[in-house]
Length: 245
Image (cartoon, rainbow, N blue to C red; front, side, top):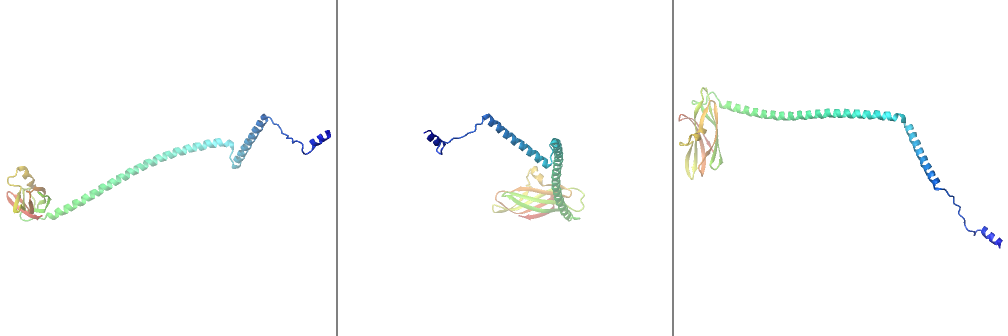
């Protein structure tokens, strides 16, 4: 029987045994720390090898870094200074451009005004012959315009030609030929019984020329046909001209 039990234990059907190695936890921690340390050492060695391969020396890094930092600071200062100079120059250029534009506008306005004055001078020179007739007084450019149903605007230029020795003093008289409510009438301005203030706009006092410009008030229902302007001196007609509406 003993033989049989012994044989059974030694046979294939015998119970399986597992052999486990037992490590303390402190040993495991130490082994992990050693692994991390070794990895760090390898990384540092690789970093140093790479720097050596690139030609960078660890001892020269700090001075070079300080030098580069100083150069950057100097370049930044120089850049700011040049930027200020450029900004000031640009501001002055803008002011100069604005001034040039303003001067160009003023020159254009002066040229236009000069051209207008030349035209006026040529016009007046054409209207000032050696003599404008025996009387020496002329009415030029008489025009009329109906600005409202009862408002008639007139314009003219009274001139004295020839050898002018004194100022001409006289009166302007306007005769409006019109139809009022179907009847033909002649309206005289200024009226005979007009107050002095109303007659003031028709007084003439000039040496070479005088512009006359005004508005006549018409009765309601007036249809204007013609306007005749007369220059009177002491009640005598010196010149006259008629314009049609």
